[in-house]
Length: 155
Image (cartoon, rainbow, N blue to C red; front, side):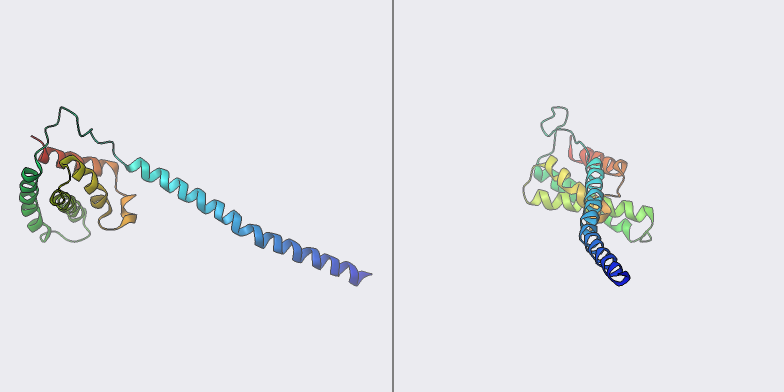
C-alpha cells in the first residue's frame, strides 16, 4: 500500500509540475507586457508639444530660405566636432545638433513644410542614430533643440 501511495503522490507532483510549467510562461508574458506598457508610457512622456504650424505668432521661412539657413548652420557646426572628444557631453550635444540640422535639411529637400521638418528631425536627434537612446534623452534637451531650430527657421 505504501508503494501505491508514493506512486499517487508522484503522479500528483508530475501533474502540478506540468501546471506550473504551463502557467509560468503566461505569468512571464504578463510581466513582460506590463514592462513594455510602462516603457511605452514613459516614451510618450518624452514627446514634446510643439507650437501649432498655423500659429500666427510664428512666421516660418520658405523652404528655400530654410535650406540656406540650415546649410550655413551645418557649415559652422561640423568643423567644431573634430575638436571634441567622442563620448563627452559637449561632443554628444554638438552631435545631436548636427543630426537635427541634417535631418531638417533632408526633409526640406523632400519639400516638406518647415515646421514639420523640425518635428520629424527631433526623434533622430534624440536617438543619436539608435532607437534605444531616444527614451533616455531628457525633455529639456529636446525642448532646447526644438527652440533652437524654431529660432533659426522663423523670422
